[in-house]
Length: 190
Image 1: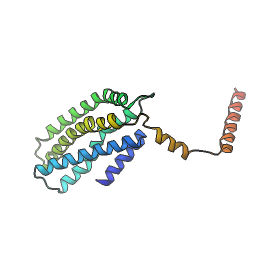
Image 2: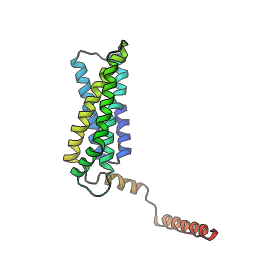
Image 3: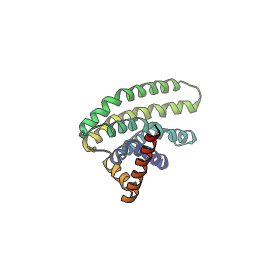
């Protein structure tokens, strides 16, 4: 679970550009994994080949809802405090996430009545994952972001990016002169 969780964190960091929100999202995904695993153990399941395949898919499904909230929170334009950002994320993404949860749960319920064992097990895991991912994203992630979320979520990422792409004054001025010369050449052709 460590490799897919790390890959999910990298994707969330890339999309949100916020280390804090990525940390909150990883906590939420870990909650979903723990809750689904505990439920399966409580039902008496053992980890076999089919369950392993289902768990590989589980991380990808559990990241879906939280990444939408993360992106909406981080990229809310303007200067807003964490409470306004959380409310914006909830209002903008909440209905879509609930609709996606409803349709996925409906599909899982239909698959529960199949004869093939893999589809039955996958349907139960999918059902539990969607329920826990919905609870995790609406409760765990939004509470963390409302209580501890950054007011300017991309500030640190922007500073690091600026330092990495910093040029010497001579390079930037020569590029500026080249751009000015190109612009003048283009305008003289017209």
